[in-house]
Image 1 (cartoon, helix red, strand yellow):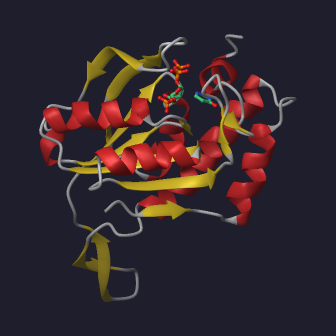
Image 2 (cartoon, protein in one colour):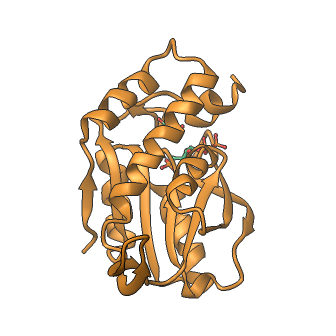
Length: 209
Ligand code: PRP
Ligand code: URA
């Protein structure tokens, strides 16, 4: 059963309110999405494995801890997931980045795949799939399907805002994938937008509408 973690940290919620504001322009929107992603990365990596190491400080030798676990891949779902990559990389600079291109057909709301480029050793990596919006859940669930077909086993999903339907859809199709998000909003509207949400994340990030 998926674990769903809502990270209601005051800094995240404050920045999320600014992101939701329709008067926030593309540059501030991008900066804020990056900042919130960095804060989410802190929480999402809380259970990474550590190992004991010996370090020589200017004073003496010391037993310390360093990251020991598997290597990490960050996989944004294009386009809007791109907005979360730099924030994540600020905290996990050694991660590799794979890309999955999906867009939602405006009529059917079903995801259509148009691009997939992943690190060669994706099956061995801890994978963090990022997408600001989890609406019907179709895009995230399909992206995870694709990753599993390539052999991926250790996958977590990080979003800014979800609908209740989106969380349920991913949990039903991928009960082994833990989900991290800043907010579960009220509902989806008839056009498949999250209410209250933030509008179209890709368009707001890239100023395309
Ligand atoms: C948005 C968003 C998600 C998807 C969520 O992308 O970034 O990928 O919709 O919707 P779903 O949960 O109902 O599948 P969109 O398809 O608008 O493409 P874009 O990022 O290129 O704008
Ligand atoms: N995609 C978005 O960008 N926003 C929504 O509210 C739903 C899907």
